[in-house]
Amino acid sequence: MGMMSEFKEFAMRGNVVDMAVGIVIGGAFGKIVTSFVNDVLMPPIGLAVGGVDFSELSMVLKEAAGEAQAVTLNYGAFLQTIIDFIIIAFAIFMVIRAMNSLKRKEEEAPPAPPKPSQEEILLTEIRDLLRKD
Image (cartoon, rainbow, N blue to C red):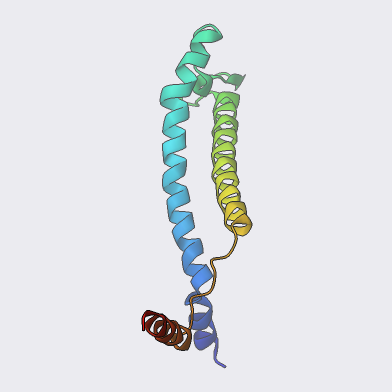
């Protein structure tokens, strides 16, 4: 089996396509969460802690000198990323929890009785006709 045919077989599996769709949706979801954190969640938190904008928090390691820019440690951006991660992880947890709950309900539900075969249906009709006579 050649490498190209092996790759084609790998790429055409359903789970690889599902994974690709998940990655694309995850990227879009990440942008939504980042916007939620930056634009909705962080302003009230910053206001509550004295008007601090977390993304701009930094510590100057070396002052700017001449044309050289200052060297800073941007720990605010790191805090922002941690908050983004926590919110994304919680949202994914809630989705998986809901899916597991639905799966459990399906497992607990009794299976539907099997549909009668064509022979049983015909015999039932014959029986009903004989009862009428």
